[in-house]
Amino acid sequence: MIALVIILAIAVIFIGWIISIYNKLIKNKNIVKNAWAQIDVQLKRRYDLIPNLVEVVKDYMSYEQETLENVTKARNMAMNAQGPQKQAQAESMLTGALKSLFAVVENYPDLKANENVMKLQEELTSTENRISYARQFYNDGVMRFNTMIEIFPNSIIAGSFNFKNFEFFETPEEERKNVKVDLR
Amino acid sequence: MAKVCQRCGYYNKNSKKACVLCKTPLDGENNSTVPMKYSFYEVQASNRRNSVILMFFLFVILIVLGYFIGEYFEFGIFGIIIAFVVSIISGLVAYYGGKNIVMAMSGARKVNREDETELVNVVEEMSIAGGLPVPEIYIIETDAMNAFATGRSPEHSAVAITRGLMSKLNREELTGVIAHEMSHIKHLDIRFAMLTGVLVGSIVMISDFTLRFFFFGGKKSRKSKKGGNGIILIIVLVLAIISPILAKLIQMSISRKRELLADAGAAELTRNPESLANALEKMSLSTIKLQTASRATQHMYIVNPLKRVSSKSHSLFDTHPPLESRIRILRSM
Image 1: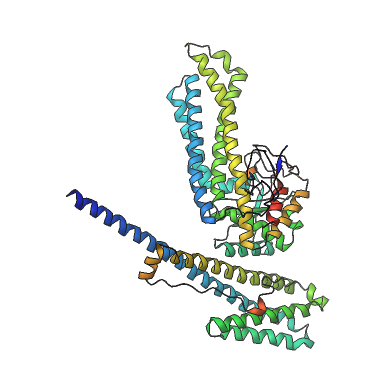
Image 2: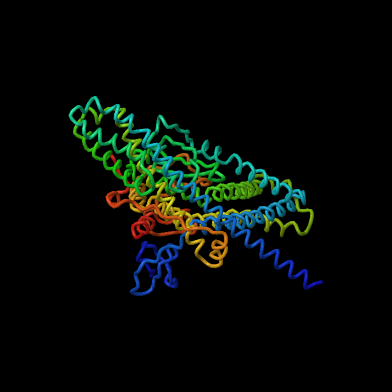
């Protein structure tokens, strides 16, 4: 009788322990998934800002049509990119195009002093930062989750419930030099 | 003689093997900097634990104080009940209304996106970096340079910054300061600071009241009826003097460590310790005092609003580590 109770107690504790680890893994997995979704939210914010920017700037910059077209083209490419690899590439192209646009803006004092342009510059600076912070948060979450499912004894439970490592967001080579851009 | 820490310049007693402030080994040629033990989960957990322990401890002080005061004034058990009720009510008020009380006390004004776009953007960026909800944002219209965060949880939190600080910092430095405040929110320092502030406040208030009562008139009307009254009188007096000091000591010592951890947290959020170091440097040059800060709220601020901390000397009552040390630690990251 006593032996049975002890065995039962051990079994209950053991199952409870497994459940608690499982729940912890699920919780962290969802944090990582949500972090990934957050990156998309910030990317979308950037797509939405660009048409406004182009609209404001285009009257002043009749001689710089090419720069403007590059921005619009890069935006469309990024929006339609298929797969993370391609998208990351297109996004970094967009960052580059925006950077050169603002470099050109520097040459137009009227434009630089325009309140709308200043506002848009602040918004875009902030958006670039948001994107990089969202990626940073995602990567931190991935690292925590990957470590969590690799250490013992979590690894056994992660293995039997088929938890998989997440992939880190890798910054494309050309963007790596200056992640946090200050567009001003 | 004192041992000066290689990393943060803190003056340590000769007997210490590692720096009191930043845990760098003090002995010999080994100058390699040891990173401060930092994981926000650990900090959060220890803050939860410390909150409970500290609450309990302060609570006990309050009850003992209440008991002896009750004994002395011969309302017996009511002393305890009053202390109990006072602490519970002030605790609840602080927990649910503390954020608004603190903001009102500091003369802070809530801002919106249209007026302070850059500030709102920076705060939102940092909440993305920390994976936290966006706190309410306040500005204090003064030339003094300071900032603080408060609230009971990340969902019910607020950050405030003075106009003086905002106008002196560039975007990057502002991000550093906000990141420091975000770390306080993430670590749950805000809850801890608010609750201790209130409990220490009640202890100080009760002690103050008791002492005043003794020195201004209370004594005459109260002739000793029992023999034990004299002893109880001494106990009450000693308690009334010692307990606020004791309570403050605990509050301050924990506050110092939390500032360092929030600095480390800010560096982790921005990946740029230099920005906060530069901001702290600018703050250290300012001599304008923040009028709306008080002893009850001083530990919440990013730099001590009441004391100009340029010296390396330190006392048990400091709420913040020396600014110079904080800057050096950040630059060594």
